[in-house]
Image (cartoon, rainbow, N blue to C red):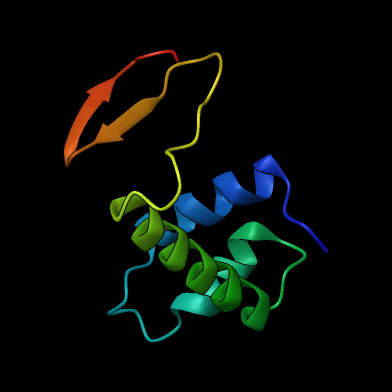
Length: 84
């Protein structure tokens, strides 16, 4: 089953709260997302890491987000409230 935007938002927020030093990180992240197992959130994290590596190596372009305030990360620099 795929991930909705809202699930992805909750996933990313939970990753920011529960760091790698938390022994129950994946349980907390799964609980925060809701409706996903620990294995599903771990797999989603691994896919995210692979995507970031490919973006950093210019193998895939940065995603384009429309509307609302967002952060565009380019070459290690953050630019707030940009719309693309």
